[in-house]
Length: 227
Image 1: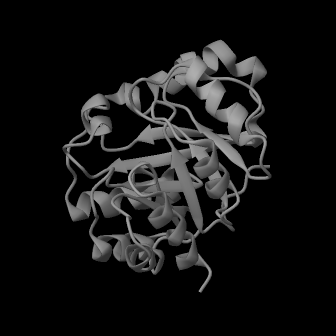
Image 2: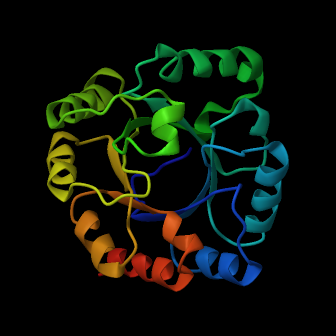
């Protein structure tokens, strides 16, 4: 059974970006709780397979965040299914997932699945445009969080600032609304101090972009969850 309740920190790797093997080894052996493989554009079966094949050499939980059916494959420890709650289009909340279950439902091990209630907060992000999102107010975000926990019983609510530094007070307020649903925060974490700030409120911090700019800084963020 895929269980994220004891997680504190994850690294998110983009199959469409390159990473040297020595840096990948450092990330996988850093003490992070998991490696998530996922991205918005340029995601193919081949580049997902290649990255998964490299990660599985290490003793680390490896999760595929499913963004396209063409890149779905077996062999991961678990699969995250995003529901983009602030999308203007119902298909990004339900229809794409429905189509996937129609095609692959007989093969799915539901114990390996976890659904993420995504709330995308950066208008400049590729995922914001791709999922046809609308920028939510604070009240909107809190309502999405309540829906994620009380209406949909989602295991994860993901507050995604996608490359930009987010609002720590909003993260705090969202955390106060959640009891069973695990709060993921992602966006703009580039230093240990930033990681500490967001870890005060979020259950799990997601570190991604800085990996490809300064891997040593990325590695330092793991320490925010050890103190």
